[in-house]
Image (tube, rainbow, N blue to C red; front, side):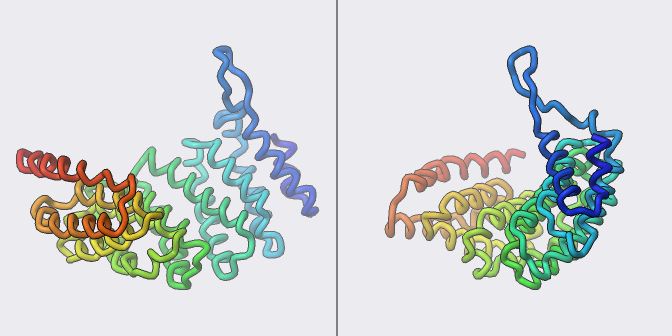
Length: 307
């Protein structure tokens, strides 16, 4: 490993690219265990002593303006983060700063889909590794990620918006419950209900997860800000399409679970009208969820009253 890391500093594109690719392949190598299972041959303990030099070498390549979209190097970053897991905490600050700087650069002119994919995967792995262990770290991630994410959304970089929505959902899910939504998330929510965003097929799963995360962390706040009708409008739009039925009922499940009983009960009639209209147009197997709703909603209401 030290010899390969040393070659990351090579000026030759071929040499440092093959060094990064070799490191990535080594970290995916598996071996048999005594019980017949497979496990990774190299884990966090094996690369822990080299984390600092490894990421220094990788980001030195990415910092070079003429070489900064090398997909093999970014894939190595992603694999290294995934392998290091909890040990990544020691280099979190510098890695996150480098990743956000890279994102700000490529967002201006996306050219390499593979590089971009591994970039966002790296950010997602970093969020999971750090925030799953200590939820209080989400505020630091939000501080660094919100500016480039806002730039992506304002510039409407459609290649990046699904990734941004997924990572925002991930951050919000890890956010401490007591913290609520906060000003930044609150300001971001109204534009998420814009119909044009939901017309892009690639946005739908990520946006649905993000709205679910909002409901999980601050349904009462959303109701107080009169967003419930807007969310129901999104549900109506999703259920009108066979391709988006699953997302529609995922969203409805979160509404059922998190919206305060008094606000939700006032909209049950509207929800059933939307579903019945869809049933009249075209019945699909996925719409068998409706009888479950009839059973689950009263039970959930009773449970909330008892609490």
